[in-house]
Image (cartoon, helix red, strand yellow):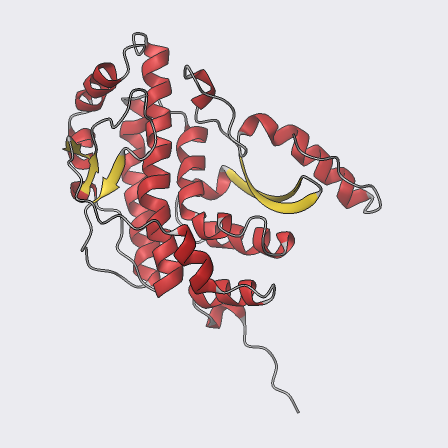
Length: 272
């Protein structure tokens, strides 16, 4: 007689992720290896995140130096919000990808995270980086430490740089959910959404409140989308626009999802 399947809790998150991918014939090493960008170039930092958190005016002054149009409180808030999203995607996301690839990863350490100088005018992505060669920790320690760090950073981003709760926590959620974004259009959407949401629930912070993983249709293909409840404000930048996960699409997508759930025979319209 065959033994029953072990409970999901008996598997590590890396193992649960691997099982998710295997169900669709995907290879974890290939997927995560492709998602992780290798950076062998030594980068110069202007100042650390720890310095920013202790002296918030450092970031304000740098924003005003780097972005000449940051002349009002609203524009300063916009750039701070967009740079916070970059912090999540450039630092937190690679760490989450490493955790799911190797079963261990370093945690985000403010004294080792730096803001890099502009490489080109108006650049708002790939500004933050973490110095490599930091010791890796196991999954349990990673989850606890990342939750603690993101909670500790939040008051400064909110009070000093006016980043909204929705923008801050949904960006953190995007970073933590990077392994699932890597297969958003490759694996079975419902399974991706379910496991991704469970993953965010592990963190004792607000990321899970401001991200809903939902199925959505793009180019006649059903995919898994980390739907934000907030907006990073990128659309306010000179060459900005709405991100595919932006909260501006939330109401429409959830309404469409409700229709699909109540009547499975009704096909969803393509996302634009």
